[in-house]
Length: 346
Ligand SMILES: Cc1ncc(COP(=O)(O)O)c(C=O)c1O
Image (tube, rainbow, N blue to C red; front, side, top):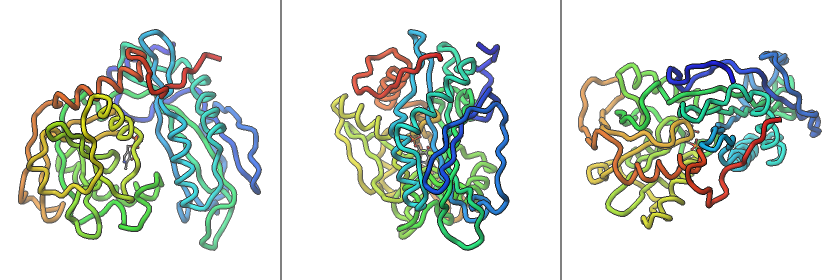
């Protein structure tokens, strides 16, 4: 195993040994190829450089308490990538091909799977993008699918479950009402970066987007879903322009297992007043508790018109949900849902 101090690592790119890639040309996939060269030769007229036919995924592999390596729900990532590619009207890998290339990428980077005790994991980044030279605006005919990996620590270098602040985005939208927000397209992120930079430069960890039509209800954070606990209820948003988070789906399932009521519905901003535990959720860290949400007329304003405050630590119900998900990912709990794919060393 590589001699790496994972305690110093954040959610960032760190070099590994290999990537695996395949191309779909005229509807036919090439054999996936492993490569230790972290370079791709692409035609400068490839659509990805111009009209952004590009989507991606994020999945994680964990070294468990029993030494086994578990890849968490890769089939769900494969299906979500298929739905993103269908939206872009371009070819995509089958679920089998997607999962097989993820497994081969893990095996080729075996020495970079962090040890169990580190709390770190091997993050997989599958990307699919249009490669055929084109000038006219149309969907990609030919695509490249690449799976790469990075051994990552906790997001932003923050301690596990350390609470963060957020600000509402009233004058920047992440996704249009009938737009592409429900798909994991690179373009969605490109267009939210500017607003994110403003929030980050003001010291906020998260930016919370609202529905673009009325700005009255909560959609999601820039790279994670929103969920809250009120009494015995798990409440999350219900909008076609919110990315269907795999973590949120798992949390809902676990919440039901724990006897919580689960509501997927519009959550109006004013309701924040009555929420007991507020969190963001996603693959990167499962849950980030939110201790404060500021409301402003414009993100650029110094003046805060309203502040919603929550506990300065992860709430007890959220903590229980977190422990169950982490327990399954790390082999501490029985995988009753069959979520983990055990990956063997090659
Ligand atoms: C916009 C957005 N929402 C939600 C999520 C969380 O999704 P998941 O739980 O599948 O990682 C992500 C991260 O993937 C994201 O980028």
